[in-house]
Image 1 (cartoon, rainbow, N blue to C red):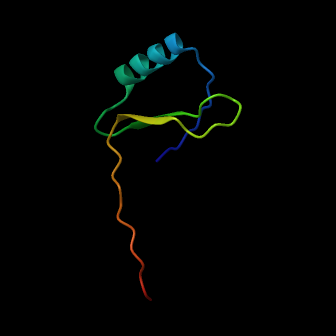
Image 2: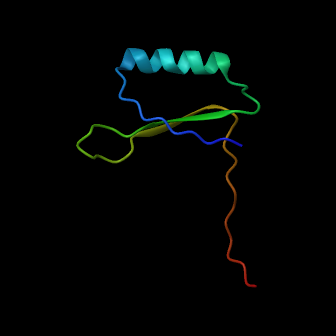
Length: 66
């Protein structure tokens, strides 16, 4: 398993190109790429999260008494 994080400050046209390039090279059944728009550098909250490839499986969290 590999986790990599890359921070990119991209103009819209380069973001579209990056999505297309990643979509062409990833293994959609196995790989997952999350693109997170952090918004302007002034510190506003996250605007959106986009996923390419494998869907995120949401695990139900429950309290467990041991």
